[in-house]
Image (cartoon, rainbow, N blue to C red):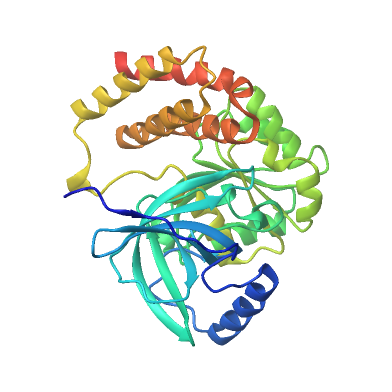
Length: 373
């Protein structure tokens, strides 16, 4: 196929093809949301989150093969796609590249395709874009720092498998927690204080769920202590004071999550699924998994890349390599390799290359050990 013909679009300073300001877009989105209230799709896999942006750069490859670059308005986003507002019809199946603005600054180009184009009213059309690869919502959605942020719309409890350490000083809350997990395949061990949680965390757990405010130490302090011990197990803190938890620096720690109190069963399951099923979940269906030989070869390749990047400051290249290690770790079933890679990516995104150096060295060591095995 020949290269698509590139067309430049002159928008005369308009924020988007509809000519909507941010304020006008907000009003339209509120009306669309109100009209759909209570009509959530039973087929939707990913939860949608508000993502009201007046100007998102989108490149669209048209059926003729030409490529047009536009500024479109955005309505909402999920881990798997984005909803865009446009002034005309776009053929489903059209390939797109969406430049998503990141919270930390700049934009990230995401490849996807138009799955649907719905006429809303007048010239207003809504494009449902599906991403080729899932995104990390925290990179783009502001509510992630003060609100429960879940990727999955629905959870099948029997899909949750593993061992959970529950750190909770209140007996009633501990019984309620166990009751909420009764339909899962999760085994729960309990610690009755933050310090006991630190002692038990060195054991093999898939996840730690802890109350934030405890009599001895807070859940945030517990996380810091277990990270100092080299424990990278994901930790979810439950709290009735999300803003207080944010001020104490939850998101400064690696591999963390939050769920609001009073606990609601569905929200608790979604918070747990975020770490057990979503983050680093790149495992594929049985018949499509790479062979052990291919996995070993991939780990060897990334080990060499990490070694070559030991003194580099090339953030994009280092991050891409860490993402590859995470996927290779998932394919190999090496949860430790996968978690360290995920933590390295989080630190790279939030604090830069130099702060991530210790994790990058650990990742290099782990890939060498995996290769040797």
